[in-house]
Length: 154
Length: 142
Image (cartoon, each protein chain N blue to C red):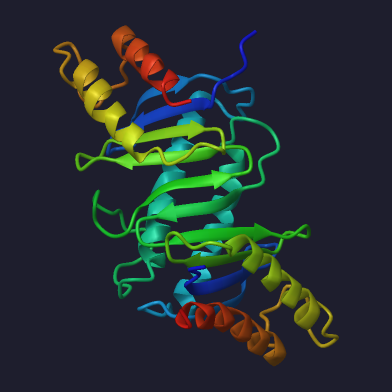
């Protein structure tokens, strides 16, 4: 049996919190149902965003905790690490959030996330005439291209 | 070794803020905001454990943002220490361990200190400031 690579799972959310895609490579522990898990993940990202905007030490604190932030407004975080996983986030100006959960030793994934967005998500999903924006999608070509790209990240 | 610390928070087991000191950020947080941020951090630390793909997660250790890096240390009884520093700072891990040592010596061993209550120990403040400014002085002497 092949050893698991460094990838664990990936989520794609739109600006309304709808989970457009959930991709799993290796996830031995799932404490909640998929819907709850996705909602919790989105909620965590939302709260962390409010937290970083308020915590920003280089700007005079204006704005209140809990106010939804526009993408690009205020300081945003791009990754956090725990002892069992590392979570990397990319938020595009259109509000699409791509979240990659990997093992903790992984390096900076910002470039990889940008590649996944512009060369895999945009190419295979957005440009697909059958795709309805704002809905969950399942696309074989997307999955194949993603798996292939992710192998090069190890 | 570039270690520019912006501020330090200490949170008790239940998520309440017991110590907050600002060492150089542009806008010092007022009391209400610092309390809210501390509780928010406590909750997010717990939620991140639930979202772990494998067992044994101990919560967020490092948070990397555009303009700062946040490093968190959780002691065995559950007290959390976190520092906000400049991106690219080295040695935050060791700094947090030193801060924990100072906490144990000047706060926990203080017979007048009530556990879980806000910290009001002068010697703790003084030794913390010395520890943090010592790093700054090392940087300035280059």
